[in-house]
Image (tube, rainbow, N blue to C red):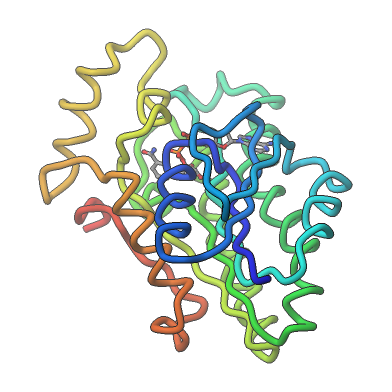
Length: 238
Ligand SMILES: NC(=O)c1ccc[n+]([C@@H]2O[C@H](COP(=O)([O-])OP(=O)(O)OC[C@H]3O[C@@H](n4cnc5c(N)ncnc54)[C@H](O)[C@@H]3O)[C@@H](O)[C@H]2O)c1
């Protein structure tokens, strides 16, 4: 049975991605730190786990027969902070969750994909990697690295018919969005005044917007697309 893995499966985008993929007939295996997922379905297998734990990830992947795709929707945010006030611990944590996790998952799934001579990896980065906001330097650096890592894998894995792409979401209506505001800021106000206004199409991105793009990039309709970055951002990157 071919399965798509979703990391960060209990998060705002992760849940929408899981539901969209299951609705389109795929089997999905989700992993997240959260104890449970609020979504359940006979074609959805959920495991509480830490994607930074290499052994745990390997065991999770080993129980799946064939991995058709991986969608990395894992991530942590940064509240807007001047660079000189960012601690080394925080910098390392952001790099671990937003970049190292992609490397750990790739190491675990690529052997299966090479054997099958097919597979797709999708890394959710952020439009902020190319259109930064002040005070988010650690987060933005991690998302730039996520995109570079995707492109590096795309060229390395193309001979095995494994495609690797990046999605750059714009400000998306999940609980993460409020975390980008400066500490103590009014989150609802920041959403409207900072984030909605920064999107030329005049609205926040929904988790479903991201999930629809994920479904397309995983499908055979996208079989010629690798090493690409799709901006799902309402024009925020313009
Ligand atoms: N929300 C936005 O505005 C926005 C914009 C651009 C990019 N993104 C990116 O989109 C992705 C999804 O974000 P979201 O808005 O759904 O955020 P979210 O906080 O709702 O979901 C992230 C999930 O990752 C999980 N996670 C964190 N560390 C983990 C670990 N070590 N192991 C397993 N799971 C772990 C969390 O438990 C959480 O459920 C992230 O990569 C985020 O950086 C979000």
